[in-house]
Length: 390
Image (cartoon, rainbow, N blue to C red; front, top):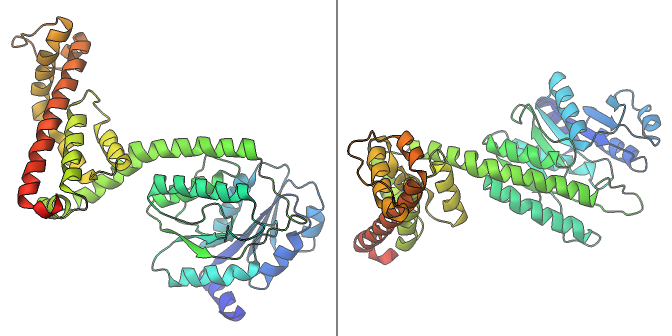
């Protein structure tokens, strides 16, 4: 793209460039001047710098400069920058680090990718992490981050740690919970959870030890990132994946479900039978309230058919619950010397509370037995109707 075309596109789509900076006096001026070749829509967040950053920024009075009194982390600076950008009427923000590793002449690559997109998208620059000069700890950290991003969102990316990004300001979350480097992981995961596409585009990268000042603290920041990923994984398994699955399942008719997700779905007959067995086992197990989340999470972990597992887990739908409770109590009685005659009792959860151990043992035996019978039965059935997929 010609520079004039980039400038026109930036103004038409209301794009600004955010430059968070903290003690990058050696490279800051070069980065700002490079961005100015494409636009003056620049917001600089001086995150409490103690070097000559403030003096450098005095030469750019035409730009929006936010001076923070003390350093509170890159994430905090970006949050402030995003709010300011929206207040100024921008729809998109390109973030570029001020340490000199990013090339401002890659801005046209982001603009072109946005123009080619059919919907709002979050774009992350994909650095060549295998080139000479890239620290091994950076390459490892990026692979580590890529894996957890995939696990949490189902999206495979080659670079999730690059700070060179384009954000759709009206599609990202309003509130955040992390203030430092881990913020850039939180925002892409939670934006992906809002069904916003996240993609990589190739960019150049420069690692110059003589100029680059990194504020990443290996132990502290890696610990914070690990804690964040633990929390995100928990929410992904307990809420996001079940939510997305149920939403997609409801879109289908029962006939299409049988055709597409049972007979024509990916996986062997053995995998499908195991999926049904898993769902039945969880559905009859004493994990009331967590059955859907647990079923789908385990199906994801063991690479089983999530649809079949979910459907079979509903074996314990309300009309059957009294019979399941009574059967579990009856089966568990011989193991705890418990009561077996429940005909004169009201079958409810109060009864379960009074015979808890008896119920737990019985329900696990019932779940194991029924899931085995259903799994074997469906395996034989599927082999009969679709033997080539055995």
